[in-house]
Image (cartoon, rainbow, N blue to C red):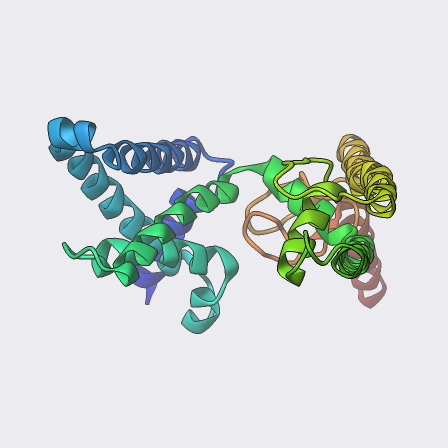
Length: 287
């Protein structure tokens, strides 16, 4: 048991404890391998480059895959909990989706295998594990999920309403509802491809109103997310010191309950010191 515990601790120090230089080197190496594997995959899609440098691309792919599998196993060993919980963690699912295509695609070229190869793009998502800024961006979306949900609902209503109006007013140009909905999306986002345009005065008025709405609607979530990001950045500068008893990490948000590095429950320094004072007072009373 002691040997297993030592192996688990060593795996945790290597993968998770980024306060140590070895863990930081490991994480940077994994980031570089992710980028290298994505680049080799993209270059390998070019027939000329694949014919000349295909063996190099395959070598990079093999090396990266060995590293990804080793990383997955190390994180599994370092995980202090049920194996099923580890498998269904978001980042574990992303790691698995990034690895599986290598073993499932083989040498065929069917539609199913091409779809499986597409899952290699999840290696980009793996980079989120190593980026504090991306973690902060995810937190911003979580903070504003109700606002964003209301925004999506309003967008949906406007798109369906405008598409229905154009389908009714100009059936010769917008004969199918799908065409009218495509036009609504292009107009609301102010892209304006021009492949389908209204011909009547009424249709042009509706298009103009939709464009004006589009300017404000697209800017609204940008402002909300920008304000939340600014708030988080300010909180990061003035955040309370919360210490993790397991890994020693102190860089947590003021309302953190668990360590963002190892998942251990954390306590504010003020709380932990007050608890220590209470314990000392209780001990002195007993004496």
